[in-house]
Image (cartoon, rainbow, N blue to C red; front, side, top):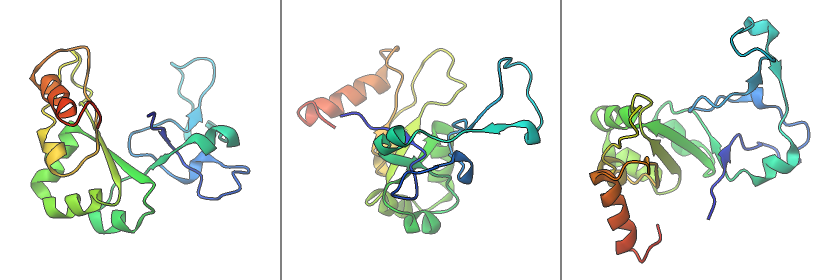
Length: 161
């Protein structure tokens, strides 16, 4: 199965869908600057582009910014949060894990390794699994303990997740 995450259209017509009405929490770009990426124009000079309706129809989950669990629970079920491993640790410490688990019963969460892992090492997936995160991304370049745990979890379930 392939899961596509992006900016899912809020309307069903898919006509003239513009990406500047929502901000994804994982920093997905909604603007294109021009030919020279080293030159960053001021805010007023950014060019906003619309998403192709055919591509928008493929989007399964809409990335949405996390504010708090009560607000997030009010979002439609196709809204998904993405958290870096640092944010996972921070949220697990400062919020009620029960609220996060309740959220994950009706919504999806994706976690991913911190950007500071330039050696492609992995974080331990047990904490995100324990609060019910369904998409726990790991670096498959490094065969370490975290990847072996992940492999064992999938084998335990007959090779599926």
